Image (cartoon, helix red, strand yellow):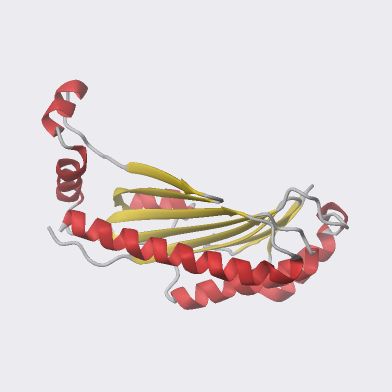
Length: 232
């Protein structure tokens, strides 16, 4: 079985705030939508009672300024650095526009490593991570057709979540909410998520965000290397 290296296929970066900004987004949705259009050059608008959201025609980009959150999401990109820079640019714009008191930073990266065989990958991972596969098969009364793992950890104000397993392209498209082909036909997927609860001053939001993002990138790299070592 061949397994290639991981590559990111989706970035989702979110800023949350429980203290409502003043003035509220509900009073500035029209202005927010217009400013977002100018900044992002996107025209598919979803104007909700408590948020303004812009998406691309393909569904591979989504940006939102809401009552209690700001986020940017880009999927199925060719230039990872460009995608990260585009989301950061939007967050900088949104922070300046809304001036919220941010208290949570969430980073989510979905990565995929192409494989030559979904079935072989599934069986190898079950053998090495489940342990008593024969016992599991007897308990189920049939063979395992698919599998996945979810792990969580917490240290101080930071929570990490990992989700991984074999995946096919139609599953990935459903995850990304896209109809077009978004990745390899068969793959090992890895979802890493970092959530940091902290409330820096308004002048330190972007600096704190950058440190938290770098920590998340390190988590993604380490878990990618670990998964590769498990399977190979």
